[in-house]
Amino acid sequence: MADYRFTLERGGVKYPCPACKKMRLVRYVDTYTGDQVADDVGRCDREDSCGYHLRPSEYFDREGTKPVGAPKPERKPQSEPEPAQPSFINAKIMQASLSRYNENHFCRWLCSVFGEQKAFELTVAYQIGTSKHWAGSCVFWQIDRNGKIRTGKIMRYNVETGHRMKDQRNPITWVHAVMKIQPYHLQQCLFGEHLLSMDSEKPVAVVESEKTAVVASGFIPQYVWVATGGKDNKVREKLRSLQGRKVKLYPDLKAYDKWKEYAAGMQGVTVSDILERRASEEDRAGGLDLADYMLRENWQTV
Image 1 (cartoon, rainbow, N blue to C red):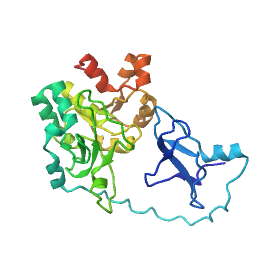
Image 2: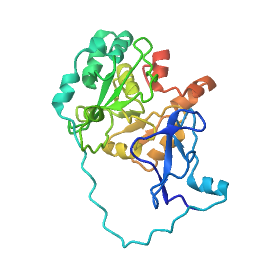
Image 3: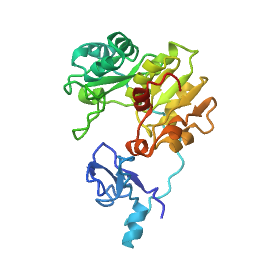
Image 4: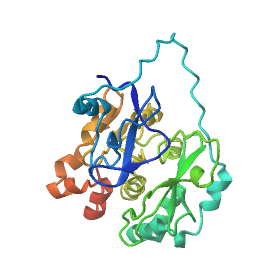
């Protein structure tokens, strides 16, 4: 039985995962009835550490039943609706966040790695802000190549280790959500995308996390470093903004094959296997990324 009748529930609501017991399961909804299929039918968004995914077809095969409700009648083909235009954050909101760096745990950690002067230069280049939402939190602003602010991702880091803080239910939130800006059509862009218009000659390096882009830029400034904000976060769609540039992708461990698929058929885009070649079994289990190696081994070239 095909799964096209069912879709993952929207709205950000998550439930206990049957495998890892975390509140990270997104359940499937029957588009004919509007009801959830079952408590355990869904996908855990902890792909690397859990990977639980029970599809509706697998559920009905297991139960030996069929979904209730008649198929929807065929509809005449309709023209595709115009894509919704992205919403933007007022620049004054971003500017107000570009201060209080003594309270910003990520920026303080950056100083411990590169020294105050270099850390300040990186902070200014990537327009990293400080948020009051959580004590010590930073804002990674997504600014497109036209200088428009798509949103800001609010996160917390350990001031001593530089590792992300994940000691709460939802360790990431967004400026437009915190400020309750409604309606808001979020259409993300690459983190660091605004840097592309400042230097059209440098090759572009793409990584997953915002932290990795900032750290890599400090170690190897010969590239324009940008981040997708996630291994599955509409990567191919975001790569379109890099057309005409020489681009190399640096996927985290466990994401190499998937990013190879994203790059397939894209002119000028290659995928580095440097982590695949260097990783130990312990590194793979930890899901290390490029920044981890740079910090550990003080890389100066990739």
